[in-house]
Amino acid sequence: MLFHSPVFLLIFLPFVFCLFFLTIKFTKIDSKIILILSGLIFYGWWNVYLAPLIIISILFNFYLSKLLINDEPYSKKKILLTTISLNIIFLVFFKYLDFLILNVNYIFNTNLDYVNLPFPLAMSFITFQTIAYLIDCYDGNIRKNNITEYSLFIIFFPQLIAGPIVNYNDMMPQFKNFKNKFINKQNIFLGLIIIFIGFFKKVIIADNLALIVDDGFLNHNNIDFFIAWLTSLSFTFQIYFDFSGYIDMATGSALLFNIKLPKNFDSPFKALNMINFWQRWHITLSNFLMNYIYFPWLKYLKEITFLKSMIVTFFVFIIAGIWHGPSWLYVIFGTLHGIGLVINHIFNRYSKSSLNRYFAWFLTFNYVNITLIFFRSKTIESSIDIIKGMIGFNGMQLKLIFDKSLYLILIFLLAIIVSFCFKNSSYLVESYFKKTSI
Image 1: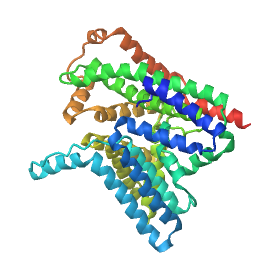
Image 2: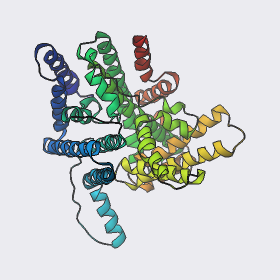
Image 3: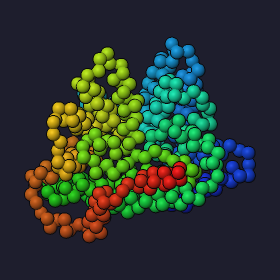
Image 4: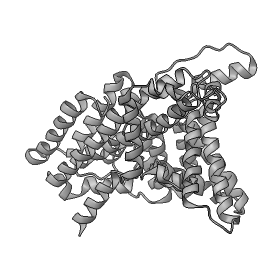
């Protein structure tokens, strides 16, 4: 069930909304149960046969989290490492097993059969969110929990598919807040606006840009200068509007239940350097990488130096790359972003001058655009073909641009205008909650 589908927007979401608040008003049933059951239905809609996997994961991790909260200090570290390892193995088994077989076959010249396991919905997001929760239990940030609250934390349907990656201590107080158990007309109004914005981003902008992108990457051989640039830029805007559109629909859906999800995008294409880009792009992933991988990694080093911190930064983004999917192209994407961040930190540390604002933006945006070519491509060869076309190796035929649908060109121009001339939709949410908190 996708957020922009009629089933979700016209049936599932209104039904769960009504059932949730009617349960609060007319019964003594814990309303969290309604959200948990709706989350299971939402999850099972994708593949009902995989639904038991998330139930097993929830029960398993809840039991071990209780040990982390209550156990003696000397054994907590072993429990944490074991639990995190098992979660990663679970993710690798379903998402990366065929990728591992592919590489084993290539390296050792074997002919092992692929397993072709179906990939459970949202397993990558669930794994990161679970790991963050377990570490918070270990660190003493979570001192009390129960199966109902933990289940809701994992399977709350608005943020289940594509995030944002949320924190237990940010979410649970909202679910427990007595004021949030009543219908809030202002939250409904704002939530519906955000859902509409997200729907527009996804269906009108992203899905139409996908037509340009699919055609360009399909015909990557001998692609000319203008079409290569149109293709690469269209994908850069497509992935942003697709992902941020989903996040908007998640944010709006959660607001209907009086739940505020964390901001995940902040006009990332306005960034002036790579550090700033990752402060604006997939913000909750950046926070996870920093708080649960980067800082703990540095903590275990005997002596922290600038060189060591840069090495850790580089490898953290390789991890971020492979997290996106079982492909070496995602590794290349993560590696390039790791290199970009390291160069950015080195420049900040040793340069006595700063770049012109517009030149800094130009470098940052185009570097991100080039790295996303590897993210979208099916093969390294097709990535190189697109880049060669952008450099001009295959000539320049401006008339080919005019062969494209005028409607699609207008959508492309609209994507540029919205990205650079308008504030991110998260500002609507932030400004609203600032006003209501006064």
